Image (cartoon, rainbow, N blue to C red; front, side, top):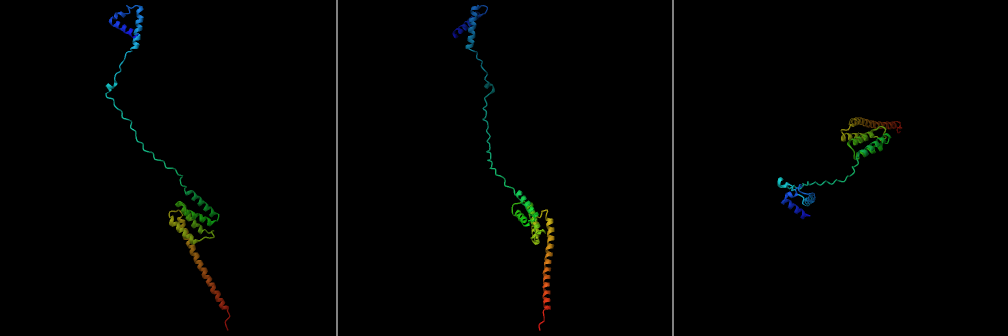
Length: 214
């Protein structure tokens, strides 16, 4: 088939009028048309694409993408439960000590207040406990009250917690208790002097009623 198409093209080049439709008969026109179509299918025309590289210049070599070095993430430290705050147990101890005081259990109340002083506590709670100890020791219903020791506890409270709101009260109590202690000392001395005087009077009465020797 290729040879036939080549012959037909050669004949066309030599004598173009040979294929003039006006001179061709219906017998020859159709076969020649089929040969032309087959030839075009076998040898399709090539269309050259323009070389874009010639116009755009030398191809630029793109740099490889930069990889940013990532800093290593710090390893998270293991989470530990927070240490229990001493505020809550101290608050409970203060409330229990106050309840014992209201119930008349003065020794037990004083013991709990001293536990607050010895354990971890805030300055406010410690000052409260210190002043309550001094008050218990001077409370008039306490059968084991000790005014002299109470004065020392109040003085300790003022010295350790000078910014406490109880300072003015402590100073007044020290003044009052000091007067009481002084009066008690005087009363005690008066009692002792009175007892001595009574003893002297008894001895004098015995000597007066004793019969004289012959």
